[in-house]
Image 1 (cartoon, rainbow, N blue to C red):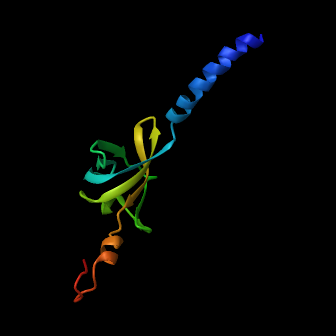
Image 2 (image 1 turned 180 degrees about the vertical axis):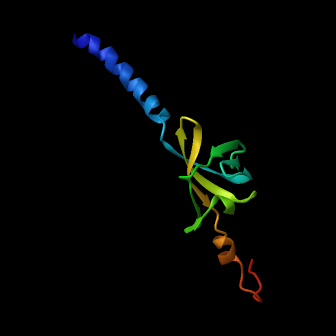
Image 3 (image 1 turned 90 degrees about the vertical axis):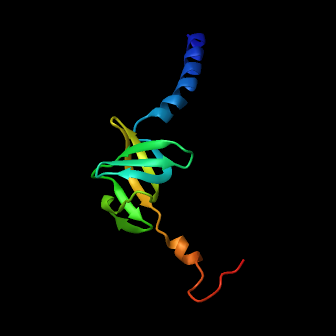
Length: 117
């Protein structure tokens, strides 16, 4: 009996990590530039050169920096980080974080001051 359970245990050890990675509901991050947006879909050009389509639903939360935003605030060309989950209908955005632009403002020299090299 004991010798039969060893191969079974080995199979479980090999199969479980793959099954755990593939389960629905697991969160993923996706970074890229918006190439198209509708009320229910977001198309991205990712940093690694791929094109991704993500579903937007009523539960999708949008933020610009730390401020609340809406799907209507997302524009083509915006840089975003999307937290998504794999569901039965594909990739669904849980949260869309739009680049706030604050860093560009903070690093620009004050008006009238020359920039330094």
